[in-house]
Image (tube, rainbow, N blue to C red; front, side):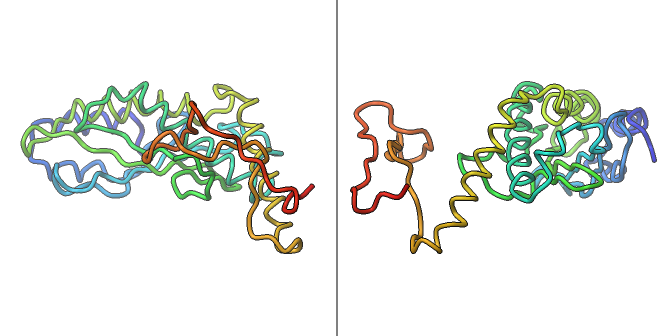
Length: 228
């Protein structure tokens, strides 16, 4: 397996060449505490971005086993990591619109996602990378900075437990497990959904998940429909 220096050398060597030269970087590279696999290289600067996977050994990520021992825990932990990854991209990628790393920022719903996989033998972050160009020429040095400098910093911040807010992760998993437990009891109680007492249901705006902060009336259930 090639290493990060080989990836950087290839990108420097193709700097200024036709965009198709980016195909030379397809493959898997060892970047020290993780591997990066370039699975599909975009065909031109205006095509959908390149598909890349970040692959870590579970022992390197260091996630507590009790948080990922069941399906609900893995869903919640994956969701948490995807959110942290999206935040880290904003800090480290520089915001260059034609050389952007993206994982797709989750909204408020906690869902089973394909963007982060937690398996027994690996943890993967599935991302896209828009490989930069000047016209239709490779900007290899900029791409090298993205893949061999910015990406490792993002991984360090977002996927290693030692750098995460451990209590926030634990609460995220615990809350989702509680929600799943409640959902599992609905059918037996003749119910189809539940709403928390005191919940703020109106949203701040039509395109926002944030609750309305002014003038919202907390939800209060009718006594006849109250459970628990």
